[in-house]
Image 1: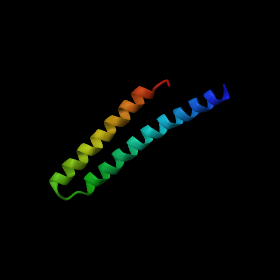
Image 2: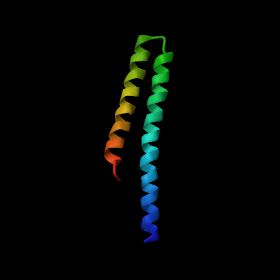
Image 3: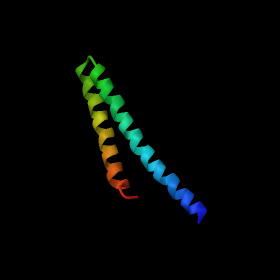
Image 4: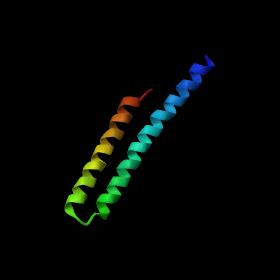
Amino acid sequence: YDCWSEELKLVQHEMYWTVQWFQNQELEWRARADESIKNGHRAYAEKQASMWAEFAAEGIKSFQGK
């Protein structure tokens, strides 16, 4: 029982860390977009930021209540 309880706690933390990682990546790409001089670079960075934001939102939705 203790092993199961410990594993559950670990997995819950991993779910939290995963979402935090996605959110951090979004912030990193948004900063890159803000710093970009070329339109193409800015567009790419904004697309990456949107992708990471979607990952974070999906993670929050998927992990909710778990």
